[in-house]
Image 1 (cartoon, rainbow, N blue to C red):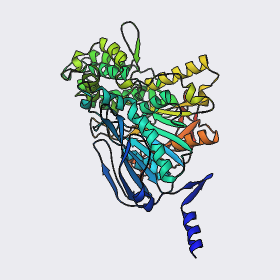
Image 2 (cartoon, rainbow, N blue to C red; image 1 turned 90 degrees about the vertical axis):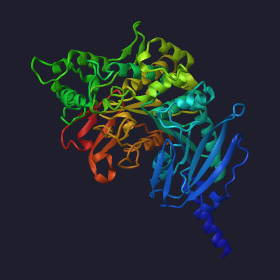
Image 3 (cartoon, helix red, strand yellow; image 1 turned 135 degrees about the horizontal axis):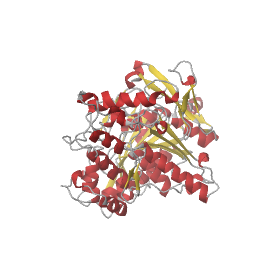
Image 4 (cartoon, rainbow, N blue to C red; image 1 turned 180 degrees about the horizontal axis):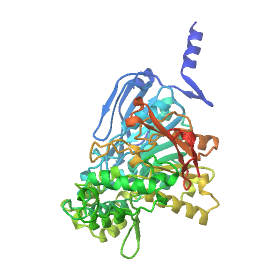
Length: 545
């Protein structure tokens, strides 16, 4: 009987994923004491049984659910610079039913806090050992005050160091907990999280086997000047150029759709390829005697042209892309509303200029050069050479997505970085970009596909199939590789099957329990989705071309 019980216990402690993979347990969690991990201290290990209440909140992220499988929450304090006494808070969530892989999830904005929402929303439910860090400080995503004055050490932690040390520590924690090394390591993040993923593979190419990155803030030295430039196109609010939210919603948005919506073969409120839309705001010019709330002044039309244009300096140096037609309802919640979006001002105050009184009215082009030279925290992640990550024997993969209607980071930035990688690979290697890096622009989707943003409680997910398994999103329709971009990445890395499209879903009110509004394929760049006929709410009625 003792032998039979022992065999039963052994069988219950493993799950088959090609190789036998150890399981976690309440006893293992309570007894866990990692050893010999330099500069890493365990601060807590808490076991959550299946369907227990998981209610965790920090200044950056929160989760409150009873839907999770059993897992062990391991909390760590990682010394990032012993001389300076700096440290990062990191958590590793270890599911009992482990799939043998780690998944590191990123952060957002300038924020500091373990991203518990994605550890519980993405990693643990799919069997990953999830890793996340507060990046060395605690703050909301729009608060950069922790970076000054001259807090360079904390900025470096945020820029790259805390994530890297957390990845190294998290893998070792998983190895010691399960008594088996992870067989694969993955990453998922959007915005700053996208930047973090690209930065890691650029400087530590062996950290991950594959990454999913969304709308990356990877060119901070250009993104933040562009953000201020966009704001100054319309502010102050009493200027002749200012465009109120109601004008975006009721005047500009409908005219954009009138001019451009039918170009893809279907009138559905979504512009599938805004590059094909030559929007002419002059059609909205006020005529004598017209109600001014139904048209645009010449100053507003000039502002619109600048908003939709790429940003070049006087010497024709490219700085950043512009907004694209199709996201008008969200644009005033982003960079062209009132008051100014807070993050860029904090970036310059605390990261670049160390001047807490600086306001965006003092902006001039010289601070672009200064920001490039300082590159605070080495945060720019614009290296086009991904050879060490992508080439044999590592063979790493990148899946990159961006909303064509992104209101915080121009989708042009994603296209620009993809094309620099493409050009470098073609000119300097034998690699074809399609073999390691694929970009998926999402028609109609706002920043990262999330429903709520910093500025307001407005719905800003976009009229888009904005749920496809990425972070910060509602759950995908299915966790298979057709509907879940993370599953598609695993299939590409582990089975060699690369995705050419992902099927996204738009839920009614962006709430899965409210039902499906429509499904739509998200096509691999540079192709775009086309309507072939049939039911416009079904992805089967569309194709990529």
